[in-house]
Length: 380
Ligand SMILES: *Cc1c(COP(=O)(O)O)cnc(C)c1O
Image 1 (tube, protein in one colour):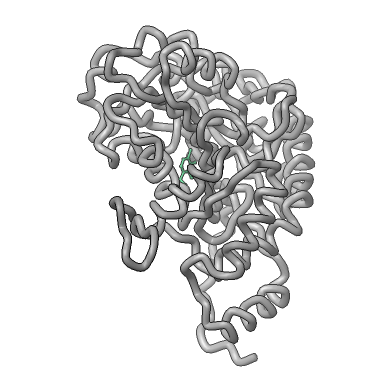
Image 2: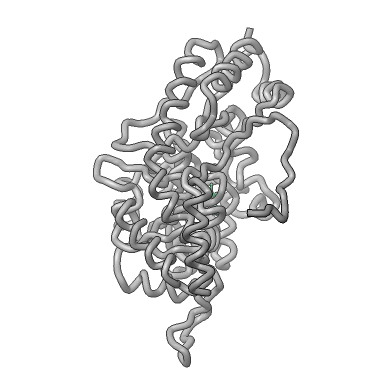
């Protein structure tokens, strides 16, 4: 096949925090041919339906509604609950979490995290509940399960909805099965930077057919039938290309995750015993996805977190300060009531100390060792 457009390749040797995994391109050609023949490119066609059902099986969840990305999925998930007022959430996340709340004209109310999980601290939630509180939007940060039992018992007590931003949690299983089965709704991301990617994409997981059809309609302009559009929707549909790619990716995801596990253990071995470097110990879960490799740089380390970030960059390693700065300190959020009243000291401390190191399935062992050696050397 003649290549019409060649992609420009970057010449730098930067190892990024993540790199997408892709199936063999030949496998995609076959699916593309069938899309070309059918001329069905979107609107919930063959691959969209097939991917939804395969995904529900793989994730072991009752209902899946595919979305163009997780941000629109979050916006629609909040909308589907019909809530108003205030939504309790974490400042320690990617900005899309709070944006999805604000985009719905709801007010985010930030609550500090638990230092042991990087997730919202349920013990601080009660103090943040007001008459206007309608939901909790929690995040499974780095794929670490939020304290679902405590969150859900609070929700029951105060009649709140619980929605999980599960963008990091694809494939994570707690002792009671998929983490995605918790709460009213969970939203996963298939963005290129995530464990499981469809270039761009996402999905909302729900528990009943009625909510599923609401989510399906919301992503399709609110259309119910050719002549009936009872509510306001958006265009959030996943197209056939991304859906077909997702079906192929499912065949490889277990291998991707086990390759990540290998890198995770190698880092743990190589980084052991460096003064001032704390390698976060993941809680004991049934299945982790090794989506991120966060380390915490304390005052005992020879140089600051930001200096280490720069030294790594000079050595061709692009680590990331996930999550710095805190969402609560960003311009759209810094004047909110909950932000004026609180310091979020745990979230702040984490955001000042954390560095996520490169982790992706085809990252070489030699590179993991080289990165670890750089960290050891600058700590001397
Ligand atoms: C990536 C991410 C999102 C947004 O996902 P998209 O699919 O890129 O829209 C939302 N929340 C968190 C925590 C994320 O990391």
